[in-house]
Length: 117
Image: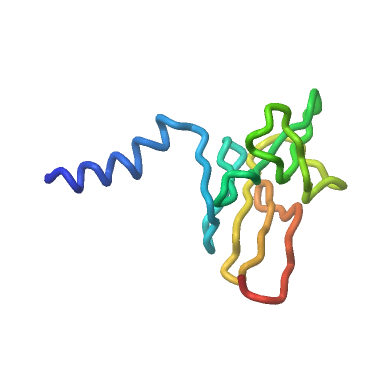
């Protein structure tokens, strides 16, 4: 096996294991973010979207916060009226362009848009 295939295998399978917190700058249809530390970071690095637990709470929320401020400053929360208990939470972009926050195949929050992304 040549160098390029070996490098591709390393990048796709080994690197995510070595770096458990993965930040993406886009989310495509059928891709997802889970509650394992994966986040979506704005192209200029100012904002970060992901799941978070505020303070001493055991509730989880989907939100956007400033990325480079030492104290997490949340600017938007999707499910503020419906906090998440536990884990196994996934944020997915559907083929119709909607964002869906779900836990164990139960929809907790959705953009429910009528236009494609």
